[in-house]
Image (cartoon, rainbow over all chains, first blue to last red):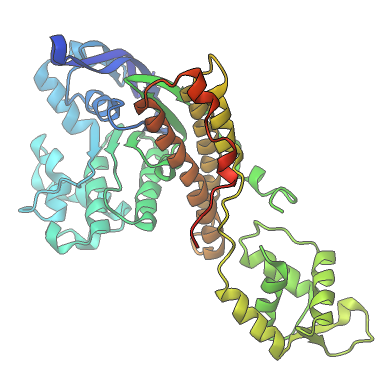
Length: 240
Length: 193
Protein backbone atom coordinates (compact mmCIF):
# COMPACT_ATOMS: atom_id res chain seq x y z
CA UNK A 1 0.00 0.00 0.00
CA UNK A 2 1.36 3.40 -0.99
CA UNK A 3 1.38 6.32 1.43
CA UNK A 4 -0.19 8.40 -1.34
CA UNK A 5 -1.88 7.24 -4.48
CA UNK A 6 -3.59 9.27 -7.19
CA UNK A 7 -5.64 7.32 -9.72
CA UNK A 8 -6.72 9.03 -12.92
CA UNK A 9 -7.19 12.33 -11.11
CA UNK A 10 -8.67 15.20 -13.13
CA UNK A 11 -9.38 18.76 -12.05
CA UNK A 12 -11.36 21.22 -14.10
CA UNK A 13 -11.96 24.84 -13.12
CA UNK A 14 -14.84 26.88 -14.56
CA UNK A 15 -17.10 25.67 -17.35
CA UNK A 16 -17.93 26.40 -20.96
CA UNK A 17 -15.55 28.71 -22.81
CA UNK A 18 -13.60 29.58 -19.65
CA UNK A 19 -13.06 25.93 -18.69
CA UNK A 20 -9.51 25.13 -17.59
CA UNK A 21 -8.27 21.55 -17.34
CA UNK A 22 -5.59 21.74 -14.65
CA UNK A 23 -5.16 17.97 -14.35
CA UNK A 24 -6.13 15.47 -17.05
CA UNK A 25 -5.88 11.97 -15.63
CA UNK A 26 -2.88 11.85 -13.32
CA UNK A 27 -1.62 8.57 -11.83
CA UNK A 28 0.99 8.82 -9.11
CA UNK A 29 2.00 6.76 -6.13
CA UNK A 30 4.50 7.63 -3.45
CA UNK A 31 5.89 5.16 -0.90
CA UNK A 32 6.94 5.75 2.70
CA UNK A 33 10.58 6.79 2.77
CA UNK A 34 10.42 8.15 -0.76
CA UNK A 35 10.89 11.78 -1.79
CA UNK A 36 9.27 12.64 -5.12
CA UNK A 37 9.70 15.95 -6.90
CA UNK A 38 7.06 17.22 -9.32
CA UNK A 39 8.52 19.47 -12.01
CA UNK A 40 6.74 21.36 -14.71
CA UNK A 41 6.34 24.80 -16.26
CA UNK A 42 3.88 27.39 -14.91
CA UNK A 43 0.34 26.21 -15.53
CA UNK A 44 1.29 22.54 -15.81
CA UNK A 45 -0.93 21.68 -12.82
CA UNK A 46 1.77 20.94 -10.26
CA UNK A 47 0.38 23.08 -7.43
CA UNK A 48 -3.15 21.76 -8.10
CA UNK A 49 -1.78 18.24 -7.83
CA UNK A 50 -0.31 19.05 -4.42
CA UNK A 51 -3.46 20.67 -3.01
CA UNK A 52 -5.55 17.69 -4.18
CA UNK A 53 -3.04 15.21 -2.70
CA UNK A 54 -3.33 17.11 0.60
CA UNK A 55 -7.18 17.13 0.44
CA UNK A 56 -7.20 20.93 0.44
CA UNK A 57 -9.17 20.64 -2.82
CA UNK A 58 -11.40 17.92 -4.28
CA UNK A 59 -10.62 16.33 -7.65
CA UNK A 60 -13.24 16.62 -10.42
CA UNK A 61 -12.88 12.88 -11.00
CA UNK A 62 -10.53 10.06 -10.03
CA UNK A 63 -9.40 8.81 -6.65
CA UNK A 64 -6.98 10.05 -4.02
CA UNK A 65 -5.84 7.49 -1.45
CA UNK A 66 -3.85 8.46 1.62
CA UNK A 67 -2.57 5.40 3.51
CA UNK A 68 -4.94 3.32 1.42
CA UNK A 69 -7.99 5.38 2.44
CA UNK A 70 -10.00 6.83 -0.45
CA UNK A 71 -10.59 10.47 0.54
CA UNK A 72 -13.95 10.48 -1.29
CA UNK A 73 -15.29 7.93 1.20
CA UNK A 74 -14.28 10.06 4.20
CA UNK A 75 -16.54 12.74 5.69
CA UNK A 76 -15.41 16.36 5.55
CA UNK A 77 -14.68 16.47 9.26
CA UNK A 78 -12.66 13.26 9.07
CA UNK A 79 -10.75 14.73 6.14
CA UNK A 80 -9.98 17.78 8.25
CA UNK A 81 -8.75 15.51 11.02
CA UNK A 82 -6.56 13.67 8.51
CA UNK A 83 -5.06 16.99 7.40
CA UNK A 84 -4.20 17.82 11.01
CA UNK A 85 -2.84 14.38 11.94
CA UNK A 86 -1.44 12.66 8.89
CA UNK A 87 -0.41 15.36 6.44
CA UNK A 88 2.24 18.05 6.83
CA UNK A 89 2.51 21.05 4.52
CA UNK A 90 5.44 23.35 3.80
CA UNK A 91 4.64 26.50 1.87
CA UNK A 92 6.84 28.82 -0.15
CA UNK A 93 6.24 31.79 2.14
CA UNK A 94 6.48 29.67 5.33
CA UNK A 95 2.97 30.66 6.52
CA UNK A 96 3.94 31.06 10.17
CA UNK A 97 1.41 33.03 12.22
CA UNK A 98 3.13 36.23 13.44
CA UNK A 99 1.26 36.39 16.76
CA UNK A 100 2.45 32.95 17.89
CA UNK A 101 5.93 31.91 18.98
CA UNK A 102 7.87 29.39 16.88
CA UNK A 103 6.91 26.46 19.09
CA UNK A 104 3.26 27.58 19.20
CA UNK A 105 3.28 27.59 15.41
CA UNK A 106 4.81 24.13 15.36
CA UNK A 107 2.26 22.68 17.79
CA UNK A 108 -0.75 24.37 16.19
CA UNK A 109 -1.91 21.26 14.25
CA UNK A 110 -1.64 19.19 17.46
CA UNK A 111 -3.57 21.67 19.58
CA UNK A 112 -6.28 22.02 16.94
CA UNK A 113 -6.51 18.25 17.15
CA UNK A 114 -7.16 18.41 20.90
CA UNK A 115 -3.71 17.51 22.24
CA UNK A 116 -3.12 19.22 25.60
CA UNK A 117 -0.73 22.17 25.59
CA UNK A 118 1.97 20.57 27.71
CA UNK A 119 2.10 17.37 25.68
CA UNK A 120 1.90 19.36 22.46
CA UNK A 121 4.84 21.53 23.51
CA UNK A 122 6.96 18.47 24.31
CA UNK A 123 6.20 16.95 20.89
CA UNK A 124 6.77 20.31 19.21
CA UNK A 125 10.16 20.74 20.87
CA UNK A 126 11.14 17.26 19.70
CA UNK A 127 10.39 18.21 16.10
CA UNK A 128 12.28 21.50 16.52
CA UNK A 129 15.20 19.61 18.03
CA UNK A 130 15.44 17.49 14.89
CA UNK A 131 15.75 20.70 12.88
CA UNK A 132 18.22 22.32 15.27
CA UNK A 133 15.90 25.19 16.20
CA UNK A 134 14.68 24.06 19.62
CA UNK A 135 16.61 26.91 21.26
CA UNK A 136 14.52 29.39 19.25
CA UNK A 137 11.22 27.89 20.41
CA UNK A 138 9.97 30.98 22.26
CA UNK A 139 10.90 33.57 19.66
CA UNK A 140 8.33 35.13 17.36
CA UNK A 141 8.63 34.62 13.58
CA UNK A 142 9.84 38.20 13.03
CA UNK A 143 12.76 37.49 15.39
CA UNK A 144 13.95 34.62 13.17
CA UNK A 145 16.05 34.63 10.00
CA UNK A 146 14.60 33.28 6.74
CA UNK A 147 16.38 29.95 7.17
CA UNK A 148 15.25 29.61 10.80
CA UNK A 149 11.65 30.39 9.84
CA UNK A 150 11.74 27.73 7.16
CA UNK A 151 13.10 25.21 9.68
CA UNK A 152 10.25 26.05 12.03
CA UNK A 153 7.82 25.58 9.13
CA UNK A 154 9.29 22.15 8.38
CA UNK A 155 9.12 21.23 12.08
CA UNK A 156 5.40 22.06 11.96
CA UNK A 157 5.03 19.81 8.91
CA UNK A 158 6.65 16.79 10.56
CA UNK A 159 5.39 17.27 14.14
CA UNK A 160 3.72 14.19 15.65
CA UNK A 161 3.11 11.11 13.54
CA UNK A 162 2.75 12.36 10.01
CA UNK A 163 3.06 9.96 7.08
CA UNK A 164 2.81 12.46 4.25
CA UNK A 165 4.84 15.62 3.76
CA UNK A 166 3.79 18.00 0.97
CA UNK A 167 5.89 21.01 0.00
CA UNK A 168 5.26 23.72 -2.59
CA UNK A 169 8.50 25.46 -3.62
CA UNK A 170 9.75 24.87 -0.08
CA UNK A 171 12.96 26.86 -0.31
CA UNK A 172 11.08 30.07 -1.09
CA UNK A 173 13.39 33.00 -1.52
CA UNK A 174 16.35 31.41 0.30
CA UNK A 175 19.75 31.53 -1.40
CA UNK A 176 21.02 28.31 -2.95
CA UNK A 177 23.12 27.16 0.00
CA UNK A 178 20.28 27.70 2.50
CA UNK A 179 17.87 26.17 -0.02
CA UNK A 180 20.07 23.12 -0.11
CA UNK A 181 19.95 22.90 3.68
CA UNK A 182 16.14 22.79 3.48
CA UNK A 183 16.28 19.99 0.90
CA UNK A 184 18.68 18.03 3.10
CA UNK A 185 16.21 18.32 5.97
CA UNK A 186 13.26 17.22 3.83
CA UNK A 187 15.30 14.29 2.60
CA UNK A 188 16.26 13.25 6.12
CA UNK A 189 12.61 13.59 7.21
CA UNK A 190 11.40 11.31 4.39
CA UNK A 191 14.17 8.76 4.93
CA UNK A 192 12.87 8.38 8.47
CA UNK A 193 9.70 6.88 7.05
CA UNK A 194 7.56 9.70 5.66
CA UNK A 195 6.37 9.98 2.06
CA UNK A 196 7.42 13.36 0.65
CA UNK A 197 6.18 15.25 -2.39
CA UNK A 198 7.72 18.55 -3.39
CA UNK A 199 6.66 20.81 -6.21
CA UNK A 200 9.39 22.90 -7.78
CA UNK A 201 10.52 24.40 -11.03
CA UNK A 202 14.17 24.34 -9.95
CA UNK A 203 16.20 21.42 -11.26
CA UNK A 204 18.78 21.63 -8.44
CA UNK A 205 16.11 21.23 -5.79
CA UNK A 206 14.38 18.46 -7.72
CA UNK A 207 17.67 16.59 -7.94
CA UNK A 208 17.49 15.93 -4.18
CA UNK A 209 14.47 13.69 -4.80
CA UNK A 210 14.57 9.93 -5.29
CA UNK A 211 12.29 10.33 -8.29
CA UNK A 212 11.39 13.31 -10.46
CA UNK A 213 7.98 13.34 -12.16
CA UNK A 214 7.45 15.70 -15.08
CA UNK A 215 4.06 17.33 -15.47
CA UNK A 216 2.94 19.14 -18.60
CA UNK A 217 -0.53 20.44 -19.47
CA UNK A 218 -2.06 18.39 -16.66
CA UNK A 219 -0.44 15.09 -17.71
CA UNK A 220 2.47 13.15 -16.26
CA UNK A 221 4.67 13.02 -19.35
CA UNK A 222 7.80 11.39 -17.99
CA UNK A 223 9.75 10.46 -14.87
CA UNK A 224 13.33 9.71 -13.97
CA UNK A 225 14.50 6.18 -13.33
CA UNK A 226 16.36 5.42 -10.11
CA UNK A 227 19.81 6.96 -10.51
CA UNK A 228 22.85 4.69 -10.28
CA UNK A 229 25.18 5.27 -7.35
CA UNK A 230 27.29 8.43 -7.30
CA UNK A 231 30.52 6.45 -7.56
CA UNK A 232 29.81 6.06 -11.29
CA UNK A 233 30.64 9.77 -11.70
CA UNK A 234 34.01 9.51 -10.10
CA UNK A 235 35.68 6.66 -11.93
CA UNK A 236 39.20 7.51 -12.99
CA UNK A 237 39.46 8.82 -16.49
CA UNK A 238 35.85 9.91 -16.92
CA UNK A 239 36.53 13.44 -15.72
CA UNK A 240 39.76 14.17 -17.55
CA UNK B 1 41.60 22.21 -14.79
CA UNK B 2 45.09 23.63 -15.10
CA UNK B 3 47.34 21.04 -13.46
CA UNK B 4 50.52 23.22 -13.67
CA UNK B 5 48.83 26.09 -11.82
CA UNK B 6 47.28 23.79 -9.25
CA UNK B 7 50.77 22.41 -8.52
CA UNK B 8 52.20 25.94 -8.29
CA UNK B 9 49.44 26.79 -5.80
CA UNK B 10 50.32 23.77 -3.65
CA UNK B 11 54.02 24.71 -3.78
CA UNK B 12 53.22 28.30 -2.78
CA UNK B 13 52.60 26.86 0.72
CA UNK B 14 56.15 25.51 0.90
CA UNK B 15 58.51 22.94 -0.73
CA UNK B 16 57.01 19.47 -1.36
CA UNK B 17 57.82 16.07 -2.88
CA UNK B 18 56.01 14.85 -6.04
CA UNK B 19 54.02 12.14 -4.30
CA UNK B 20 52.72 14.57 -1.70
CA UNK B 21 51.69 16.98 -4.49
CA UNK B 22 49.67 14.21 -6.13
CA UNK B 23 47.86 13.37 -2.86
CA UNK B 24 47.14 16.99 -2.00
CA UNK B 25 45.91 17.78 -5.53
CA UNK B 26 43.35 14.98 -5.38
CA UNK B 27 42.24 15.80 -1.85
CA UNK B 28 41.75 19.50 -2.54
CA UNK B 29 39.74 19.03 -5.72
CA UNK B 30 37.29 16.77 -3.92
CA UNK B 31 38.93 13.73 -5.54
CA UNK B 32 36.90 14.44 -8.66
CA UNK B 33 39.98 14.91 -10.84
CA UNK B 34 42.26 11.91 -10.53
CA UNK B 35 45.88 12.64 -11.34
CA UNK B 36 48.53 9.97 -11.80
CA UNK B 37 51.99 10.43 -10.42
CA UNK B 38 53.57 10.30 -13.91
CA UNK B 39 51.50 13.36 -14.86
CA UNK B 40 52.74 15.14 -11.75
CA UNK B 41 56.41 14.56 -12.63
CA UNK B 42 55.99 15.48 -16.30
CA UNK B 43 54.31 18.71 -15.25
CA UNK B 44 57.00 19.46 -12.65
CA UNK B 45 59.70 18.88 -15.27
CA UNK B 46 58.05 21.40 -17.57
CA UNK B 47 57.65 23.93 -14.75
CA UNK B 48 61.32 23.47 -13.87
CA UNK B 49 62.37 23.97 -17.49
CA UNK B 50 60.36 27.23 -17.56
CA UNK B 51 61.99 28.43 -14.34
CA UNK B 52 58.74 28.41 -12.37
CA UNK B 53 59.90 25.79 -9.86
CA UNK B 54 63.32 24.54 -8.72
CA UNK B 55 64.65 21.53 -6.82
CA UNK B 56 67.14 21.15 -3.99
CA UNK B 57 69.13 18.53 -5.81
CA UNK B 58 69.04 18.24 -9.56
CA UNK B 59 70.95 14.97 -9.68
CA UNK B 60 68.85 12.74 -7.43
CA UNK B 61 66.00 10.43 -8.50
CA UNK B 62 62.72 12.18 -9.23
CA UNK B 63 60.91 10.69 -6.22
CA UNK B 64 63.61 12.09 -3.89
CA UNK B 65 63.47 15.60 -5.29
CA UNK B 66 61.80 18.30 -3.28
CA UNK B 67 60.26 21.09 -5.40
CA UNK B 68 60.07 24.76 -4.51
CA UNK B 69 58.22 27.61 -6.28
CA UNK B 70 60.42 30.43 -7.69
CA UNK B 71 59.54 34.13 -7.69
CA UNK B 72 58.71 33.80 -11.41
CA UNK B 73 56.38 30.94 -10.41
CA UNK B 74 54.71 33.16 -7.80
CA UNK B 75 54.11 35.86 -10.43
CA UNK B 76 52.77 33.34 -12.95
CA UNK B 77 50.33 31.95 -10.34
CA UNK B 78 49.09 35.42 -9.35
CA UNK B 79 48.54 36.34 -13.03
CA UNK B 80 46.73 33.09 -13.80
CA UNK B 81 44.34 33.46 -10.84
CA UNK B 82 43.23 36.82 -12.21
CA UNK B 83 43.02 35.89 -15.88
CA UNK B 84 39.39 35.27 -16.87
CA UNK B 85 38.73 31.87 -18.49
CA UNK B 86 37.84 31.89 -22.17
CA UNK B 87 34.07 32.42 -22.32
CA UNK B 88 33.68 33.70 -25.88
CA UNK B 89 33.17 32.77 -28.64
CA UNK B 90 30.44 30.35 -27.52
CA UNK B 91 31.41 26.72 -27.93
CA UNK B 92 29.62 24.64 -30.52
CA UNK B 93 26.95 23.16 -28.32
CA UNK B 94 25.86 19.67 -29.35
CA UNK B 95 22.49 19.93 -27.62
CA UNK B 96 21.62 23.26 -29.28
CA UNK B 97 22.53 21.78 -32.65
CA UNK B 98 20.40 18.67 -32.01
CA UNK B 99 17.37 20.81 -31.19
CA UNK B 100 17.86 23.03 -34.25
CA UNK B 101 18.21 19.94 -36.42
CA UNK B 102 15.10 18.38 -34.83
CA UNK B 103 13.09 21.38 -36.05
CA UNK B 104 13.96 20.44 -39.60
CA UNK B 105 13.16 16.75 -39.40
CA UNK B 106 9.56 16.14 -40.49
CA UNK B 107 7.17 14.49 -38.02
CA UNK B 108 9.54 15.01 -35.11
CA UNK B 109 8.02 16.18 -31.83
CA UNK B 110 10.64 18.65 -30.69
CA UNK B 111 9.02 18.95 -27.24
CA UNK B 112 9.44 15.24 -26.74
CA UNK B 113 13.10 15.56 -27.74
CA UNK B 114 13.56 18.42 -25.26
CA UNK B 115 12.01 16.22 -22.56
CA UNK B 116 14.33 13.28 -23.32
CA UNK B 117 17.31 15.58 -22.76
CA UNK B 118 15.75 17.26 -19.72
CA UNK B 119 15.21 13.90 -18.04
CA UNK B 120 18.72 12.78 -18.84
CA UNK B 121 20.30 15.97 -17.45
CA UNK B 122 18.23 15.76 -14.27
CA UNK B 123 19.23 12.13 -13.79
CA UNK B 124 22.88 13.19 -13.97
CA UNK B 125 22.10 16.02 -11.50
CA UNK B 126 20.54 13.46 -9.12
CA UNK B 127 23.82 11.54 -9.18
CA UNK B 128 25.86 14.65 -8.38
CA UNK B 129 23.46 15.63 -5.62
CA UNK B 130 23.86 12.13 -4.23
CA UNK B 131 27.61 12.82 -4.03
CA UNK B 132 26.88 15.93 -1.97
CA UNK B 133 24.26 14.19 0.16
CA UNK B 134 26.63 11.42 1.20
CA UNK B 135 29.81 13.51 1.48
CA UNK B 136 31.27 14.80 4.70
CA UNK B 137 29.62 18.21 5.26
CA UNK B 138 33.05 19.72 5.97
CA UNK B 139 34.39 18.72 2.55
CA UNK B 140 34.16 22.19 1.05
CA UNK B 141 36.35 21.36 -1.97
CA UNK B 142 34.03 18.56 -3.02
CA UNK B 143 30.95 20.74 -2.48
CA UNK B 144 32.44 23.51 -4.66
CA UNK B 145 33.31 21.11 -7.47
CA UNK B 146 29.89 19.43 -7.36
CA UNK B 147 28.11 22.81 -7.16
CA UNK B 148 29.91 23.94 -10.31
CA UNK B 149 28.69 20.86 -12.19
CA UNK B 150 25.16 21.26 -10.83
CA UNK B 151 24.94 24.93 -11.85
CA UNK B 152 26.24 24.07 -15.32
CA UNK B 153 23.68 21.27 -15.69
CA UNK B 154 20.90 23.43 -14.26
CA UNK B 155 21.65 26.03 -16.93
CA UNK B 156 21.03 23.34 -19.55
CA UNK B 157 17.67 22.48 -18.00
CA UNK B 158 16.74 26.17 -17.95
CA UNK B 159 17.68 26.48 -21.60
CA UNK B 160 15.51 23.42 -22.39
CA UNK B 161 12.61 24.98 -20.43
CA UNK B 162 13.00 28.28 -22.27
CA UNK B 163 13.21 26.47 -25.61
CA UNK B 164 9.97 24.63 -24.79
CA UNK B 165 8.13 27.88 -24.10
CA UNK B 166 9.66 29.70 -27.07
CA UNK B 167 8.79 26.91 -29.49
CA UNK B 168 5.27 26.62 -28.10
CA UNK B 169 4.63 30.35 -28.56
CA UNK B 170 5.84 30.63 -32.11
CA UNK B 171 3.47 29.98 -35.02
CA UNK B 172 4.12 26.75 -36.91
CA UNK B 173 6.72 27.65 -39.54
CA UNK B 174 6.39 26.70 -43.17
CA UNK B 175 8.93 24.18 -44.50
CA UNK B 176 10.61 27.01 -46.41
CA UNK B 177 11.10 29.00 -43.19
CA UNK B 178 12.48 25.94 -41.46
CA UNK B 179 14.99 25.46 -44.27
CA UNK B 180 16.23 29.02 -43.67
CA UNK B 181 16.89 28.52 -39.97
CA UNK B 182 20.32 29.68 -38.86
CA UNK B 183 21.99 26.37 -38.19
CA UNK B 184 25.40 27.72 -39.03
CA UNK B 185 25.06 31.00 -37.22
CA UNK B 186 25.34 29.36 -33.80
CA UNK B 187 29.09 29.19 -34.14
CA UNK B 188 29.58 32.27 -36.28
CA UNK B 189 27.71 34.47 -33.84
CA UNK B 190 29.75 37.48 -32.80
CA UNK B 191 29.78 38.42 -29.18
CA UNK B 192 30.64 42.07 -28.47
CA UNK B 193 33.81 42.20 -26.39
